[in-house]
Image (cartoon, rainbow, N blue to C red; front, side):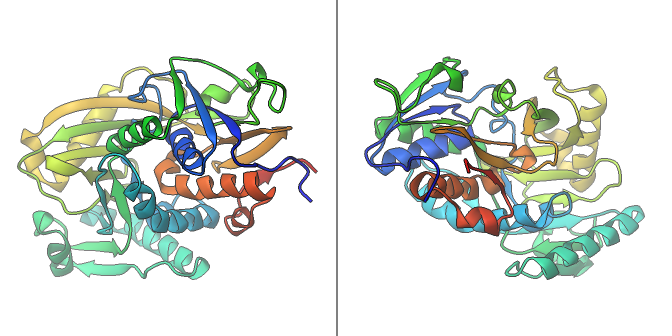
Length: 368
């Protein structure tokens, strides 16, 4: 038998934090008939949330170069879940599954060989991943005509995808309102403000505040990321493209209407000051090296944010006291793994355990 009370419908649930994880949970729990209330320190546009400053790539094999097989399996699971989740939202969200293209310049071939070896190791460890394809110059040109002649080797990872993070956050907020979720914007609350299960109190409190939860989860740290958003009418890329480099490997994620999100930097710091000149120059120079059309692009935004990260760089779910559940540590993989964590949390609330957590080798801490 579970050591904590299970969710009974209709239950009263208070969510803390309305970033990506909080909004997904609010929509799903409200859709299941629960009474959901949300407190968010920021506003509806998710300013201050790591989810707003992201490329939202869904690339489990590509990300296996920097993470564990369990996170790759979460990414596999999430790729299958996103279409159904998006189909139920109140607004459209750009989503594609055209794979990931990985390119490199000739001088970086040794680094590319190491990356290929790592990806092949992942494929041997995690069943069900589509086989990567090794491309020569003709193969690169066939997959991405816009870079034909500039790159003579590449890798193609079928089945990987991306979505538009800001469209998704807006669609989730609209769906929350449509479903009757009571949302308190600019409302900073903590789990200690509630006594779940008591008279006049919610049945459950779920904490999804990311770095806002550091007082309760002191192992959390910030890992800074910087991205540039460009409008480049002269550039057409069909899919997220990554460029191998020993110091600053970049990604270019093409969104709708010739908007591109370009990122690379990852700094062990919770500094939220503006991007440095060096970082901006590296990102823009690397993008220009991929396609000269970026020279005439217009800079829409240079943004920084810190991702909530635990010591092992892996996510975790825990019930720290009766009826209080915390989910955190999504690090750089938020959009890639959020649906998997959503399903784990729902299993915990409804059954007291989660078979999925075992499949994902996810840190799940429940009362004994």
